[in-house]
Image (cartoon, rainbow over all chains, first blue to last red; front, top):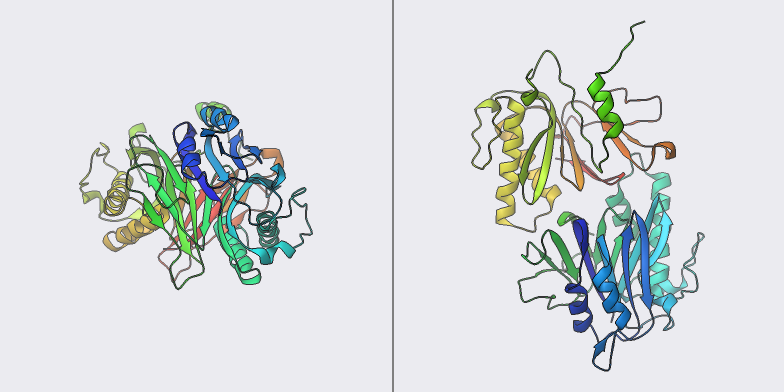
Length: 247
Length: 194
């Protein structure tokens, strides 16, 4: 199953130490990789269908990117294919523009039911995976909420409701990271997210990964959905969790 | 018809300020301080952030509040004590749980504040990344700005809003202790009763 990494910081931040550690620890995911970040509120994604780790070496382009990417929000995805083809189009993060933002989405999980979803909006080109459809579904529902909600629209509620609808309509295992450049949202209904903030090495950044052991020897906080709930949604800004709510 | 011209320095600042979050406070001549040091916003650094705080309202007795933390705001206006009170609560809650969500922590801090020092509060509290707005007695007006103004969100305690466009009122439920909003970027992330 794929693995996810995210960094959120108060200022533009690079992760030259943490991205390679993540890649090495998650190297079992051999079906592609992607790094997404923001430059002047514009989402920029670099991705590849090649193996992240080959002949004992990290992918050269990944290493180079890890050294130079600098952004308040960085999302990284290492792919283990469970849906769709092995090609660059199916590597995450995906990008869609709506609600005045560039949104980035990366997903870890298995939700074959949602592969049949057909959006009435712009589709993610050439991607046939459950992840692409899940992102389109969330976009479509959030736009519906935007039209229907009493003003002012509340972004967290909109995403929480959209996610809840998605799980009802298309049950599956969803761990996703979603960002609009200002905020990072993280949802989990299987496995876990591991958090780290306040580390001396981090200097004001917040790290998150799906890897159960975290990325350093420090004590990472594990968060997962409560057994009697359907999932857990978090909103992160800078190095703070602003909100977390069970769904 | 009266011609209203705002202070020249205010106008100059309005033209040049460039920030993700901007807070402005205009002091009521009948209350509050009259020296520039007594005017809002106030600034305190805690929990790895620079925080700004501005308030309108009426609160009795909080002048006597003695902060347990440092620094103390060296100004004798009650708004400074409110800010210190909230800072103290947030720091305490964070010590107990470093991963407590900021919204939940502030909601608890406000509940404590209202228990200890009941009053009429409308305030803005912001750091570099997000802005909280709380009101328990008068409405706030919100406008997600038009394309011509860029991708921004405006909030004001001015009851008519600031233009003829479609401002949305945030009115605290009289049965609740108040309404707390958190704004990140140009969006209201969440709003709920305290």
